[in-house]
Structure formats: structure tokens, C-alpha cells
Length: 203
Length: 203
DNA sequence: GTCTATACAGAGATAGAC
DNA sequence: GTCTATCTCTGTATAGAC
Image 1 (cartoon, protein in one colour):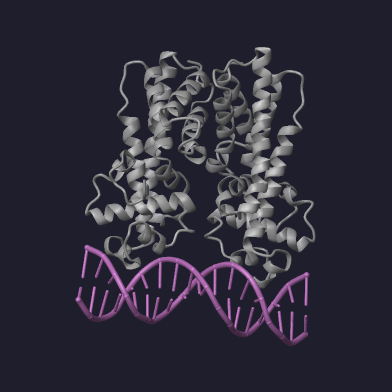
Image 2: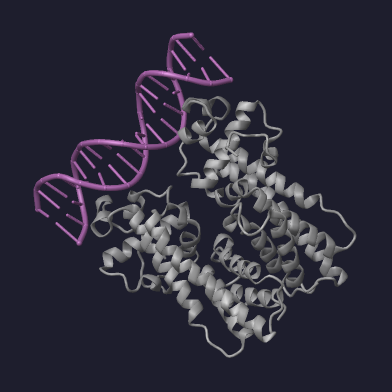
């Protein structure tokens, strides 16, 4: 699949971005930023991947950083949605479902996830603040699930904040090591991590 | 502590690098790469942090990438040393000591660790291959400890390779979120992670 | 070994035609 | 909205004096 191909399931992240040219640019920039990093990527790279001229980048985005910001905001919102849409009576079940979804998202969408997790430093202070608010909600959601389980006695952890950090670490780090076509499918990564987290939390 | 200050314990990583000017440059480059990323760092930044002229970078290093390579190689070797120097009869004790050491290293030396873990993509193919060999030894060392524990029945894990990946994830990701002056000391991070890993492995 | 000065290439962003 | 052409600045690396 090329960066400009929007038909695959991987590109449903940009579904709501219009017009199509802006969406292609976003997908192209995500691929480029994930592969080489924000600062190593040139606006010419992005334009070429999107099949357009170098100047076309600036039709829909004011700057290269604004492109990054949109990717980061949409990516953070998508992963937050994933966590908040988890349901279930049992805290252990909720946590398992959340970890499976979150970890497999970091595998399936490892390009977007890499930009989301590792390019925060390239955002302007204002944009970083906006994304930071989403990140705090993500952390609070996981911590809430953990506290629920501790309250019912389903989890047994000495340090809730530390355990929250560890759960997020396990999932986020998937974006660093995951390679498509490797030993594990995204679903398998999710299942593996859900199991490891259950044990880590003493469920 | 400034980047050029070599007296602190944090700078013992570069102890064996001579002459002193080359060591200062390495420490300055590490600080800059960790703070802003390799590609966002200019050779002028590095030189200024080391208190020298822009051209001084090229007295001891052929290129900016060579500077990165030295940091990466020394950093990888240091963290591998940490793991291989762990001793003890009991596999659980060995794993706990290894995780505590490895995780706390990623906190204490979070600047070096960030360069080591997140700037591999900026290395030339030859340099990446050399560093890759060290990385495989690091992974094999952790996997070996895990297999030892499984053999004696001290650990109970369904997927040894997956668990190895998870143990490394937990430790490596410390370099991403750790901030000095935060809630936890490096030693506390090490202890927390050693405990979480013990439980994750069913010890 | 270190400096000042600078060559050369490449990057982000804009102008103006279509 | 998209293109071609280009402006301007910055960045890596080198030359040559001291």
C-alpha cells in the first residue's frame, strides 16, 4: 500500500478530513514522519508521496508543523476514543479490553502511533498544550480503571500511579518495536499485552 | 549541571573518551540530541554547548553522524555491561536485579538512553549494523534469564519471546517519560519495575 | 588544536501564472 | 486548487591563519 492509498483499513483514521487532497497530504506526512522522523522529513518528500508539487503542501496547511499538529491531534483523539468506549461490569474485563485495544492500535497504526508518541517535541508550545490535554485524559482513563479494580479488590498493586505508567509504557512501546509482517499480528500483540497486564496487576 | 560539566556522576559514561575536548563534545551532543532530537540539532548547537567554535566539532569527529554513532555505541555497551554483570544463583533474583539496574539506568541516564533508543534511524547502515549486534546481545541476555527461570519453574510464561519484549519495553520506555526532579528517583523506578516484572512473569 | 571566514547544498515558504 | 519558479535562510562541512 502506498502512502496516497486511502482505501485500506489503515487509513480510516483520516476518514473525516476533507478535502481529499488535504487527507492525502496528511496520510503522506504520517508515513514520512513515521519512517524518517519529523525533522528529517522535507516538505518536498511529503508532497511527492502525496503525488503533488512541493507548493501543494501550503494550500491546505500553513506550515509543516501544522501538518504534524493535525496528525497528532487526530491520532491522540482516536486512541482516547478507543479507551473510553470500553465497557463492561468487571474492572478486570474492562482493563483487559482497554489494553488489548490500545496495544493493538499501536501495532496496527504504528506509523500514526510513532508520530503521536515520539514527535511531541516538534510541536509549538500552543499545539503541545492542546495535545497534552488529550494525553492527560488518556492517562486518567487508565488510572481510573486501575483504581476501580483496586477498590473492588480485583487488582492488588502497591503503587497505582506507577502501575498506570507501566501499563501505558507496555502499550506505547509497541509503536517502537512493531514491524508489519513480523511474528505477531496486531490482535496477537493486544491479547499478549492484556494477559501480561492482568498478571502484573495481580488480577 | 551544564552539558560541559563532566564532574558529575552522570558523565561517567564518557570516562574513557579522550582527549577531553572530544569528551566534552560527546557530552554536549548527547544533551542536545536528547533534548531536541538528532535532526533538529545543529553542529553549531553542539559546539556552543561544548564552549567551542562551530568548526571544532570536526577536529575529533568526521561528521555529526559519527558523533551520534559514538554516543550510541558507548551507550549500548554500557547498558549491556549492566545486564551481563548481574550475578546470583536464583533466576528470579537475577532477573529482578537486571530489571532494576536496566530500568534505573534508563532513568539516571535518560539523556543518553533517549539517543540510544530513539535515534537509531539516523545512523548509517554500517553503524546501525554494529549497534544492532549489541542490541541483539541485550535482548538475548534478557531472554536467557527468562528461559533459565522457566526451566527451573520459577517463572510461568506462555510466550517467552513476547515476555522478553515486554520486559524490555517496560525498561526502555522509562527513557521516554522520565523527568529528573519528578515523583520518583531512578532507584525507585528500578525497584518498581523489578516488582512489576516479577509479577508479570508469575514468579 | 582551535579559530574566523566561507563555500555549497538543501530546506521552508511564497509569487504569480493557469 | 495546483503548478513552476524562486527567494531566503540555515545547516554541514572545509580552508587556511594562528
